[in-house]
Image 1 (cartoon, protein in one colour):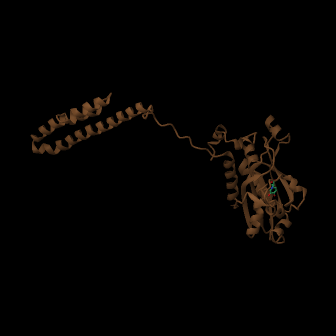
Image 2 (tube, helix red, strand yellow):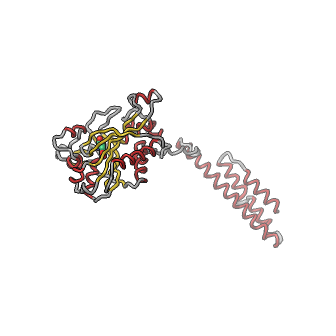
Image 3 (cartoon, helix red, strand yellow):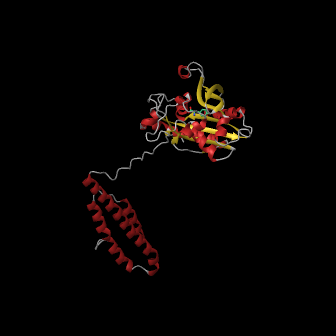
Length: 340
Ligand code: DAH
């Protein structure tokens, strides 16, 4: 009887079914009222007691195997039937779920922020709707000063003192009035300017601002901070140069270029034949700005810098049209799916 039961187990597992009717016939054959299980139970009753101990579990195993196959095959054919009725094939493997990707601006923002964080900077954000003091007056832009025209401003119609910030330098003012030196902070965020949208300009873009104030901070410290950043971001061999410039809130002021090279035609075009590319504006915080914000300029000095995230992202990935960042075309965004 043992061999018989073992042969049955193999038979049960190897059956194939083409229809629900065949499954039903199989069920009746084994566990129907006059099925094989019934015969087996009859045989089992007359088996010697010492064999019962061994054969009992085996009989249960056969019954379990039949029930499991019947349940599985029935649900299989039920699904197929439902699928036929609804026109949906439930047996098809599920398609992969398309995951979103990090936006290239977000990738670059995070990379820049993490470099400065590792240098001991904290991260601070400020409001996008600002007042004149934080965007202009507190940064040494006198009323009617032509430097205000460097940045075409969106004003809030109901209240001419309110405007959309044109640069993240406004967060410098907020932090200087909120806390005492020493401070080392970077301030990423969105800024707005009333400019016609083109491949090179947009009315909304992103900046990262840096501010470092302590005793005895010098221009050499500024240069070293920025060189360190440039090497980590663009590669260890990166060279930078500082050109004199003008901003109302820094004195002296500079613009920083990285050496890009002049090897290809593209290099020549984007660097206008110089090999150098501008990446940011910077300078020593003007003592007037420190004093206007309650910081003793005899005791403390500091430096600041501001860079455009779009600009740096375009350089890094050789993207030639700024508008691509805001169209959210999946074919564009998917190219950054490998970036973390
Ligand atoms: N706020 C300037 C702009 O938007 C950039 C800038 C220049 C920021 C010099 C700074 C700085 O902090 O020191 O064009």
